[in-house]
Length: 138
Length: 138
Length: 138
Image (tube, rainbow over all chains, first blue to last red; front, side, top):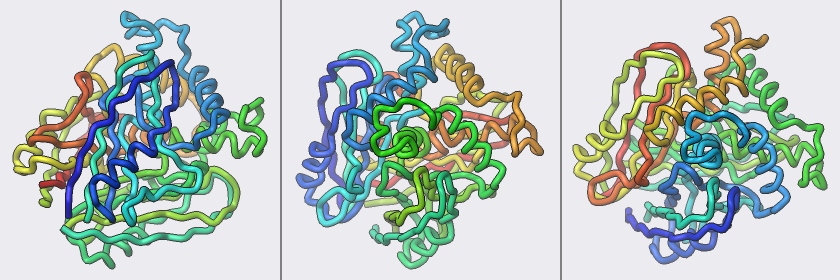
């Protein structure tokens, strides 16, 4: 059994932006030389997350719209001293993936369904962001 | 440290169906011969998920009712070209487990609380579905 | 590759209480002697969970308020025979972390963002609770 780690650096452009990081995760798996095991994907943030979902802008738009209705921006939040975008991003993080994912690796590739892609999801404003990728296997 | 993998094939019967797959997951753990470690459970779908919860139809019914109120079927969804059941299933997946779970293994058995069971949760229509089960340990 | 496990015993004091368990998780990592790998955190409960979030009472208060609005106590729940706090706690668990987390370990320490802390989140009433901590790595 082997262990391999890499860190992805991202720059996001806007609030509620889905960034497809599947290829970058798979590149780490290939570099690891690990053929069979698991890859763990961790965002080191409370105001952004990682999530599995289709790479489809209509799904992303629907998700943004309903989540913003359920966790409304315009409300008296206790955590409003950093702004209401910040206050709501913390709640959205806890509902949407909570910054940690585990995904199977087989024959040196990610095991995902036909429509599954791994996304970084920005819940705040444009930021420099970081994702830790850990591969464990043989 | 050892690695073992198996794939479960399921056939679901209806929307928002919880299927208890605890015994099937434990069978894979037993077949693996791994005594202490972790088991990783991954649904290869964006319109269904895996989730830990009690095997209790009243809890499942309550969850279905409130989630369908929060993510209503009858609404103008961007992703509606595949039908509104499809559009909403993608959002529910992101809120309910997001297709990935990790569960401890001890003495060759799953470590679950008294009332915890592992479920496959169909969020779309009757389908042939797949769950990847990965055991890592010693 | 090595494996190490420990069990944390907690006593919670109230409903929707966030208890910061980061130091206790890191103590297990240090005791394990494992330098690089992953730590898995599992609550053996359906009515409480584990979740990554900032140790900030305004965020915790905001989360409690909005989640209690979305999953209201005062409603005719099917699972009400154990009380409505119980009925709603099962749904909250499925939305908030679902009792399982995976977090990277590097140089014998947890890899967390500046503001990330690991919390146990009580969703029911004061209880004796248990968290399984599993470290895998080298």
